[in-house]
Length: 511
Image (cartoon, rainbow, N blue to C red; front, side, top):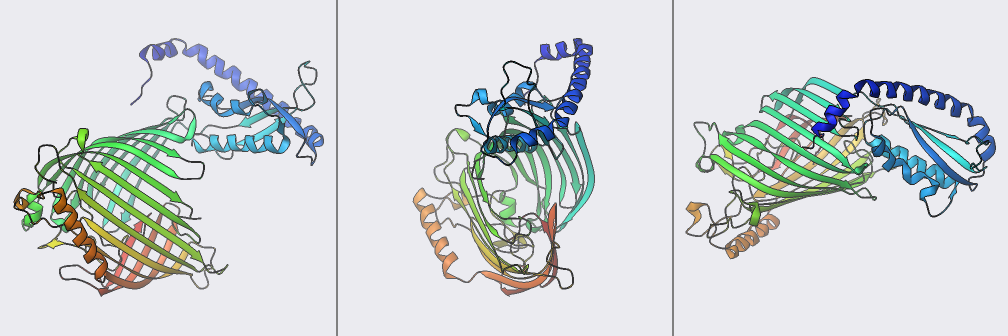
């Protein structure tokens, strides 16, 4: 985590009085400038009229009220606006567009109050160097408070918790943010995290993040509790076309502990400690108009992870990939929408250094499927392989669903409340080892893994998926989506756990 140089801190404290005086004088200057250029707006409007092709020269850009933000940080945003830094002259239309993009960039840092106001003014004509086409740009950006503290409670699928969240903004004057979070709950018994992120080169679409965390989660569907402690670092960026990417490294110590008396042999075999060292990449292309309750658009998302390969070390080795898609199709302007989604995942065992064959997956890393946020009509982790009372997860899965969303009568299509009719289903399967090393948790060779994968994929496509249908109500709150559904399982395999009747779900991602 980056920190200021100790000498710089000492110098700031030593000159605290001078800095405060400079800020007071700067505030007075900003107020005078604001009043001066505000009065000149009518004169500027008379000059430009409706002639958007009028040639203009941006001679200066000033950001008012941003007293805690570093000058060098702001200069990287606004200096490209200056005509002196451009090869070609502006038209008025081009100048207004560039100023609007710079203002939007300032807004996306999250450290200024909305809206950010922009004013244009003609410079003093008594200045010899000024020209009739010169324009001064003033951006009024009032900074948000230094911190936010929130406390509250949350209720979701089979879980409720109380939390406290604190956010410190603009720590070093460059839109840096420090987030601290703590929660206690019924399933996630405790969770704590501390995250620092900072824009790179004053670009809100390019960030670096460092995060440390610890959590303890009760996994009642598999008769154990999982304890996690570790950290990760990420590079996040967004392309000009809106594609989001995350590339990161994580090191996590995991513990399968507090086993129930009736825990299955599969869970007991994976009990104890493990350390995962992995690199992950996430790609998101989200073109939905409102992700929590889309009426049009589409989503494509992939998450890939490689652990224990080569220099990554750790004591688990695998390649894991998931893909998700969703499309929303409106029926005219009626408020009726059809949404459909597909998800799939694969966990491919790799050979860990020192082992004689690929390592079979652990319960910590395998996929789980079923519940109100994935395949409705089944209990949480109700699909896939089971060992006695425990859902032990799988290495390959596919799931899909379709929902018809209709406005509630007498409520109207403008509200975020909908009636839902849905059908969804999925399969979750595990790769089987047939070698003599099965008892050691190993596959005999890479060829055995490939053969097992082929058989598993064949079974995935040849047999009917476990499926359910139902109706319910959906409410899209700004922070989460809430669903209450009546579900009826249609296809269910032995040992899988369906859920006929009412179920409640809350989250930001639904199938």
